[in-house]
Image (cartoon, rainbow, N blue to C red; front, side, top):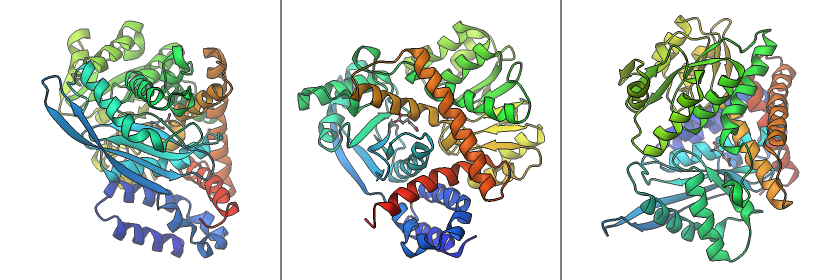
Length: 450
Ligand code: 2IT
């Protein structure tokens, strides 16, 4: 590894000793781009890497809200404006009890390179709160979102920073957040948030975009290997918005999603979750119920449920970890390899621990695709939503879907080229990191040393 890269990684390990997720993502990205640093000694002179691991700005704020029983609660709000070199800060808000600086920073760092890969002018940002939406009433969610936006609205805007959804933040939350933004500012600036409802500027296909994009990317990988998606079995995780989108597209293309997971365990559906629209739409019902239990699916459709287990021991052609960070550890990676899986397609942000990822990438014949490329379709359609809002127009679902397909193919092809340029062969992980990094690095260098 390049000596400067090693030094910066050591610096990050020390400086962020209490932020393991952030250290992990920096290590993954910087190890992958080491050959670029070899080829560009001017980056060390500009100390570009140390600059890149320091967010341009990151702040916390107080979010106070009242529950239905009249009890007041105080949560921490976060926004990390990580890198604005190629566009307004852009990235989701995550509402989940475990949200902390390390998680927000890792997501913001990833987002910077992911957004660069989309080819659209978006910088990297992320935010959220340690608020736990589970079991909250509609009115409590609304009051929380209003209080959150009251604290945040001065620091965002269509040309400044454009939040969206992530775990715990969907169309409903974006609606309440936007309503409060509009009330406070008294202007129609709907480009300030993406993932909005269709009646006030949301882009068609945004709800499906991350899952659809993941499948389009998978199709590019399969095409490269001379294979077809029809009839393939896919092991997925989670049952949220992203997995729902994967199932919908898999249904259209004749692929079979056989597993879902939740905090309570996983389910195995031999016929395929993607075998009927009823099953796919049930995922939405499960999510809206706030129960956060995947066992509900097993009860409803009479399929096996494995409490407390993860789905990675299941035999499938394709594994798509689509739930959350660090879902696949070394022991799971070994099971996946032992099952002869050929395609390991990351979907959630950083779903694989670094040692498990290295192990999977070293398996002969296994193809590993990185999440920052595979899940970029979500934020890409957010970028399209920003364009539509700024031009006061609205594209049809077909138009957006067509653009999404082109973007996912371009991300795949750019990654292939970037890896080949450095003599790394068909290495999608290295290629995506290098392609994203090069764009951000070039923009930062050209704009001078701030
Ligand atoms: O991780 C992600 O890319 C997102 N949560 C979506 C971000 C966005 O701005 O649409």
